[in-house]
Length: 252
Image (cartoon, rainbow, N blue to C red):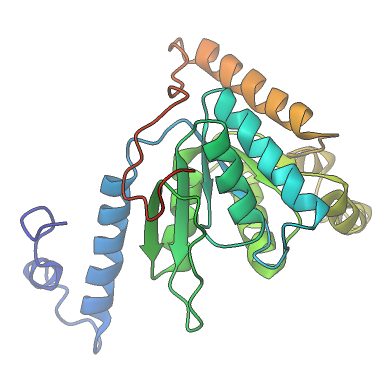
């Protein structure tokens, strides 16, 4: 992105009277602002999209890999693009399935001390420095979320999205558990929280079960159709075949 599109933010902050921020903070705010702007400009044309969360550590031999791949493929066939964290494992499976279904496969990668390599099934990608901006973009771009088995990162993304819906900071989009493995991991925790009164039944019901990829996609499609009727806007779905932009690897 050119300097004309995004001015020299430290100077902008200085003009606003923020130059008294303690050492390095003005530059940090400028860096954060720049990343917000660049991400929005780079990814403003990929909706409607569904974000798929899941572990980077699960190989293609794990049952969740095949579930994520098929879920993403079916979503793409219905006209939805797919957003992931851009890495290996479940993220790779979802991006791969999206390509197979003809959707735009999007990866929101994160710069880490031990670099997370992008998977080879991305049409569009953006590398983030800040986790919170990355999570903001997951939510901004998506009309539904599917969570597969994962670790702390997946749980962080899932529960932050649930919190935003619980507190009505965002619309009530479907958040779907992608398979029995993730249900088995989450249900005991949710049951204990209900037992102690720290969440309500309505809070618990923000998280949907799905018996298979077809059920998950049906939930997304039905919600998108209802939303279109409520807002009195026509459904906007992407064509099934897209030109790849910023692709590192040609489509197979």
